[in-house]
Image 1 (cartoon, rainbow, N blue to C red):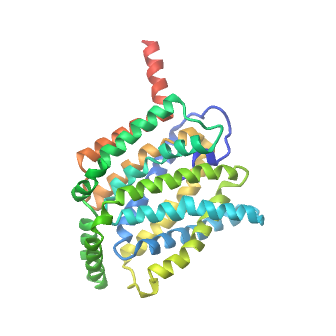
Image 2 (cartoon, rainbow, N blue to C red):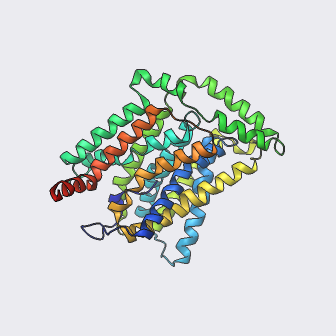
Image 3 (cartoon, helix red, strand yellow):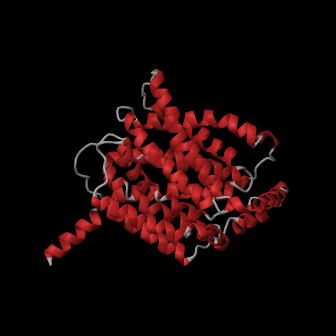
Length: 358
């Protein structure tokens, strides 16, 4: 996920117009970030959550530092800046990535993407509480309320969460297909899935918390967006490289203690490709494209990607993983999107202008 609008330098008071190339870049960015849910679903066949997240951020960090060196960006030595990268890595990578990946062991990738789209809602609330110059307006408050109504529609009231989880088409179907295809070359995959099935059965009560874990990830992204305002004078690509490096260092001991990755069977080809995809494309390349689009189209226009990420994730999940979502969850996504549109304000302004024109 991106750094928030408040994280980055603002270049003007009005957003630049979106031309055709900007729209293509925006759609590409939504596919890259929506693809992270798709790649995660595949990689979870062989890898436990912490190991997967460590691979993602470590490979992405290597790529991003390579870009930093190619651009001849000076590497800072201020320990306070590196401490900031550490906090940013925890809030923007370690915590949300781990929560989303764990959540996807129990819910479909499309549903995870829908819930993750609530990040701007939480960012607005956190910014309102933690800053003096980013307070909620009536329009934004209305948008937040509408968005949270959409969340309730998606996951149900607290008493309905367990039953709603039972109706979600989880990763069982896609992983079974992948395991079947890989069994000819990697016999360990089927045994891995059997072990995961047993673990899922034992974690029955925890499975009901999977949607809430993704929402907690969105809250963590919101905290990162507010905290990241201190990096306004730091080259954005350097911030991305610093935070992925910091989160990698924090994940190494956790991964070794919990997952013991040296005891895991060697992953299959699909898993290796998925890890490379989520690290190189959905993290490193996505950050690079994000910052290029920020300069070209402005931060306000860039927030439109929030509307497109769930669509990309759902299309990939349905088209390639055989996932399905309930009509209630699709309707909830539409309501969340309506809340985001109210917050964005341009749809309301267009409606007013159209009414005045008539």
